[in-house]
Image (tube, rainbow, N blue to C red; front, side):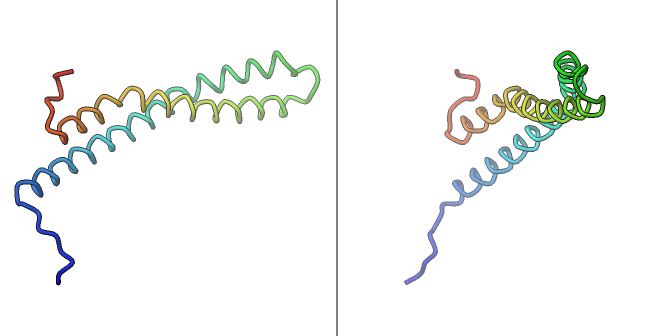
Length: 108
């Protein structure tokens, strides 16, 4: 008795094609996330530096509130950039799923 499963040739080709489209969509998603993080990085650092300066710059040394603002800004940029990149490219992953299911990607 064999442990191999017979797969029809057309199903295997469709699977390979679908897998390649999925890899391409995921590469695009990664590029979009990295770009979004790089774009939001200076904005978020500036916002959190301003907030830290307003909140407690007169109570502590300058390097404390600057490092706090930069650190929280980097964390905020990573979160905001990842969310923005994933949101902007979600339609590509949906399109790949629709094609894999045999549905016209432009029907909905």
